Image (cartoon, rainbow over the protein chains, first blue to last red):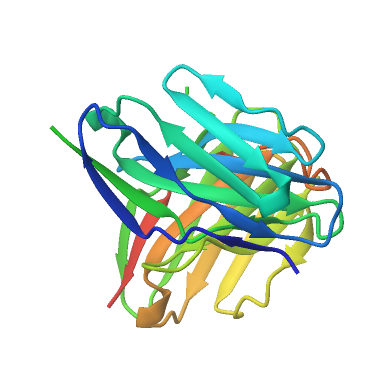
Length: 114
Length: 115
């Protein structure tokens, strides 16, 4: 079975602070993909990043960075120097070769206060 | 033009009404999905269509009836709903439904309230 756990339900920080969103996953597949999506107040989920299970190299995109560690089954997301526009619900998701189905975590509501 | 468009954005319906949600994608994708997002629940996959054929029905009650006339359009027909069906219904698309590594492209969703 596949499962994604985002233990942080809500996070609130002041603008310019760094913030890390945690994601822990479970799967029996050896080949799988991990995703992060952002859901702003407008409703649509916006794709942020995809990482496959064979690529543990961390990735940085502007103020966003992702830390993938297979040893701890984690795929954490860090926003550096947060901005008010980063306020949204963030979802971590997993899709394995076996299940062929995208499973989402519960989401973390991030609020950046000015 | 946005990639995935859903209408209406908001819908209020009584338990005896019949209504339909519409989704249209302009990305040339062949797979389309319906998801349900309730408060404090993970996103729940409802239906998957791949090349117009339904490939997934995630034990959805029959009061929800999907229709996919072509690869660009997806409908969700609603009848005799319950108040607990109130949620945000999201449509998504991907190049194909058989590829587990493709990101999904989502619409803005329809906020449904059942009174």
